[in-house]
Length: 254
Image 1 (spheres, rainbow, N blue to C red):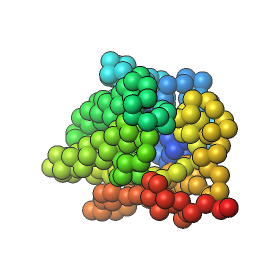
Image 2: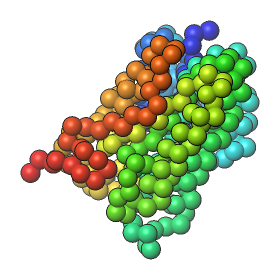
Image 3: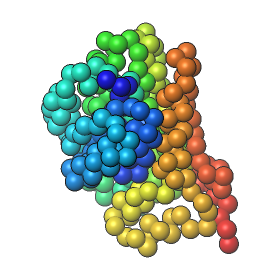
Image 4: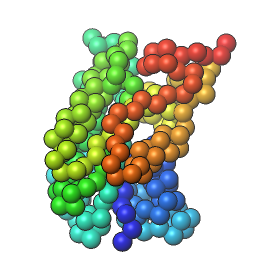
């Protein structure tokens, strides 16, 4: 088999762009996500366009039993060829002040952004350890580097991703496994539409006055880090558009 990339949250945004970028480079793809129809569409598209091998697994990363069951059902020869794990599944919900925020939103963000990454990583790690090589790429955020107003638990979840990524890198050093944290700034995807719970006006306004990153911009950066020589590891990388300096500061056109 070809080298294989395992990608969570592959049905949209950065995850989908990663699936396309790696498929175009000849990787076999294990694409996962919650939406079966989108996974099927992605598989058909990539197979037709790149003649690549792709399998899908439909599950919610929040559910440990579902994660373990789905990954357990993936053919062993696929799992034994995983070279890259991209922990991309994640979301933001709400932009409310701490005292007004929805507790369920908080739980969903923590369960997806933190627990989901842990569940998938632990399920895949035995196969990387057996190979004594591999690369785990965790998608964080500039929100995991600095807190901003009304970011509260979303920022906390991405701070956790940053800390876990650093810890993984230390603990997995003895297994020759690379661990990279990628921390994008504003990326024009479904992110804001999800955060504002389907309010297209608010979602669109989030990208007014500047040119944000595209999902493919981030995917190409991820691909670069994943295809460096074996002795090189990009540990931590923050990527923003030129008009963004931090989680809060933008130079927007008037």
